[in-house]
Image 1 (tube, rainbow, N blue to C red):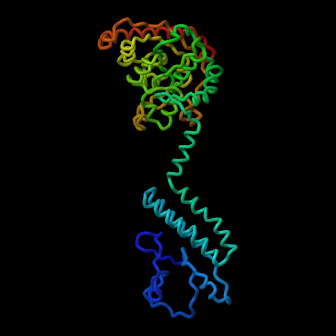
Image 2 (image 1 turned 180 degrees about the horizontal axis):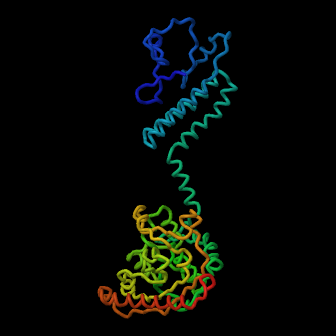
Image 3 (image 1 turned 90 degrees about the vertical axis):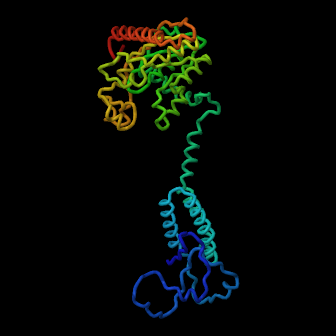
Length: 415
């Protein structure tokens, strides 16, 4: 099939040419320095797409001795393939979208009209198939996939979310899994749950452990299932989690809040129960040989928050998470290579692939200590010496409870 390309646009409509121009135009099928061979007999040229419109007079004047040639469907398919290759090479640009639009408008009515004038039955079939060109144009446009992903992502989103993205409907959908982990997999025992106030702001300060941060989810499940007031816990998640695709958004919908002073203060002033992990990434990344040894509690940001907002601090001790996903190898070089704070290297991950992220069924115990009420005025938050002393006092309380709980348990798997 011979196609005529005008300029740089392969989809532009060909201009009508005079008989003299048609005779003077040389065929471009082959390039040769020899003169073209002598013509023996004129052949009927194959129709190109889009074909010139035929009138009723032309159809009536056509001789009935020879059968009219059928539409060049194979040529149209080749033309479509060439056009799509150019569009894919140009990616999703305005020029590519405009070219696809012209291609669809050219192929859809042109092929159907050509076939309908020469073979009514075939024309009807081809006219029914012209929707395939529109489908191809839609599938090769990146906005199609963005729209589809948006529909999938929003189909289970509740109409009302709070200021931090918590989605009650989404959290309820995952609640059976969390209840299974709490009741059957880790068989969590809770001690001192009555030390958590039923109303008003409270900060639950807990140790951070395990290569994966399951402790925040289990802390929230413990308050929801065991506390008389069924308090909801909004735990502060590490900043790096929100740099991973989807992970930060899903954590928000489950109740996590990005850890920063502004978010924590807004939650506490609204009377929320906030879970705080002062060890941060250092607690998650420590090796199994250093298990249940508290890392540095930062600069006491949680103490400053408690002083400014008048919030009581409840020390929380979590035992069992260290054995659920233990870090057995340091990941400093690999973490720097990937640009993340740490990479969990456990006995099963990454050696078993995604299956290696499944935590071990260790026995968990969550102990809530007596609240630490700070009587100092809000201006004391600027006293670095006082903040450091209170921070170390809270850290010593949690470390002492950790030592007692670990010493009295008989087995990692049975408690």
